[in-house]
Image (tube, rainbow, N blue to C red):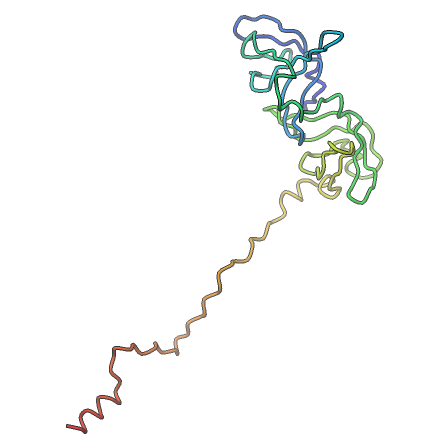
Length: 211
């Protein structure tokens, strides 16, 4: 299990010339807390502070000992990235409360759990207030999140899913009913309707009698 805090403090190195670009001070995440969106390198300036960032697209690999980036000129300013307004820093997510739709306090967030491609697969908890699987594991899967808490600062989860994510994933999903009307079943006894252009036996008999 790899945590987001494992990336903080890592040296950032350009793969083109091997130059060190500094160290990761924090991690940016998408607003829905599904992916890493960038690396925060810190800020400078007293009156007008500039915050420096490397976007996820410029990261080659989140290595064990260092973070490798595409080139030495990939550092940009946060103000030059309009999309960064919706990003969340890992340090801001720390200690965010977790509850259920009914208001039961479950835990507080301690860290993010990362997949191989930098996607967020779950959350490590710093404190747990309920008994059961969540208390034992100390984690909740990302798929159990109903509301990330970006607006009110409180994350809401599906407690049943969080306690047993495998069962929730294996639950069969019934297909929606068809909007088309069902065709009537044809029975062997039903005879086909007579065609308009086919003469009937009664008409043939009348013609013979007339002649």
